[in-house]
Image 1 (tube, rainbow, N blue to C red):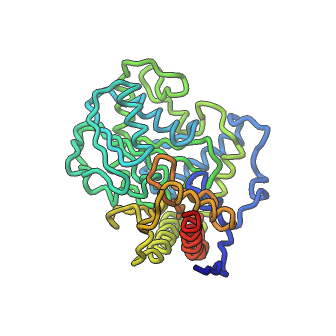
Image 2 (image 1 turned 180 degrees about the vertical axis):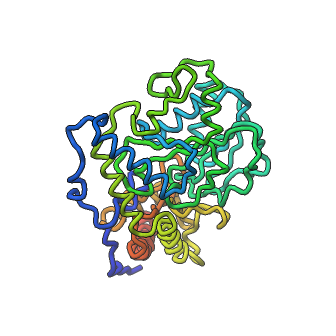
Image 3 (image 1 turned 90 degrees about the vertical axis):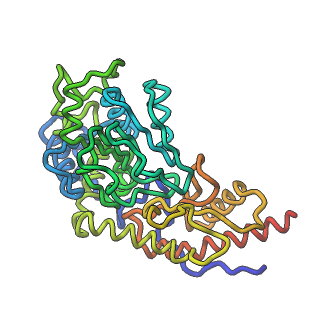
Length: 384
């Protein structure tokens, strides 16, 4: 089989699902205004953190009575704070359809030792929300970063629910609509859709979540880094930029630059449109091909950020080795970096299609995937 490498190449080959591609035309010069060497508690530091919170509120259309806090340890830190601080007051249902959701199940069942109802779905599917009891506290991911599936909307979540909904939205925020009236806790990391630097998380709380925090004390001890209340009252400073531990003002500046870029495009709607176009470029290419397919089984629940693909050609003898070889070839060619499937996911590729990625780069990558696939099929035949 003779193969010719495609002529066009992605201008930016960064398709990692976290940390994700920086905003287009990013340069370190954009961070010159960062108040480095200054206390985050000084007026300039507080002002930056407050601006980040308010721009986050504006771009995500977060209700004014919801609190937004900057917390340590990325999305993981934000989720752990919520789980350890809020759960235990009511029965719990854990929903999992990918690696990170499964991780929250482990924390709640094995670490907090709660007798939770666990609903799971295989990679490429989500659980049936019609079966979920929202009189319980319900924990779930909005978008399965490692499985390429998402909630299509929040219609299945009742407005008059008795329990809290705790949503890990880290690869959804800024690229998908989040119905905050259906969500009591929302967490994410700005290193996902806006390509910010890592280590910081965002924790958003509804009034119902705040009420729980102020009326319920968990049976287990809480490390200082998880504590959201003092003397039975919410620590309001956390949600005004007075972070629990020292934030990186360089990372804060980087997020601020990304937020301003997003606003300049037209805000959340423009970001969603960019992600939608990127995902469509992938799915238009694979449509009708018999050697590659979407891991997501239902187009209605297919992710628009972490698009996961599987190889379906019957000639492939070792799926995991083959997929790794294709990803390695794409990296060697310099056209797709970090595009392999997550280590716990089925073998394949994962193409980050979030809002900082240019659709022209996604479109340029697609023929390279076919080229790499054919090259590995040929290499496999030669070995045989």
